[in-house]
Amino acid sequence: MSTTMSFRLVPTAQAPREARARVRAFLTGNGATRPDDGSQLQFVSALLTSELVTHAVEHGDDEIDDFQLSLGLDAGTLHTELSLDDMSLPIDVPPSDDRQIAYGLALIDSLARRWGGNHTGHGTCLWFDLDVDPPT
Image 1 (cartoon, helix red, strand yellow):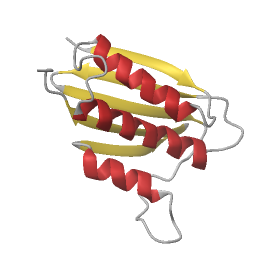
Image 2 (image 1 turned 60 degrees about the vertical axis):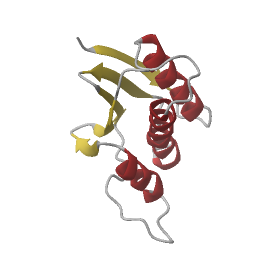
Image 3 (image 1 turned 30 degrees about the horizontal axis):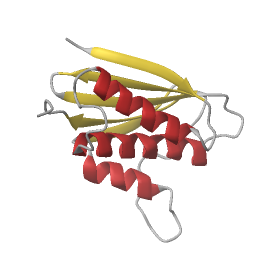
């Protein structure tokens, strides 16, 4: 059975912290982790979610009011998706000394099982998947 949750975030400096708290609560509330267990899943999911949101806050349009973060848990996979209407974000930029926008995406690339992004007809969608093992 699939479990999902979506919420809107305002693109401020506090948005990554709120997103981290939401993904931790989502995992705990759905039995994927235990409260404050300090598991790798808790750490990596919060880190990568924070990177998605930070990327949107730092490199998005100043005029955007909010964006949507969706979390899904199904068949041993956490799927996290950030949707931004009316905004185009960089998606596949190789890291270099003068292009620091790509470091967060490189981190996602190195830790997620799969990840991607696309420019939709009305904005940008960035996502990643992580494997979820039952807590021990």
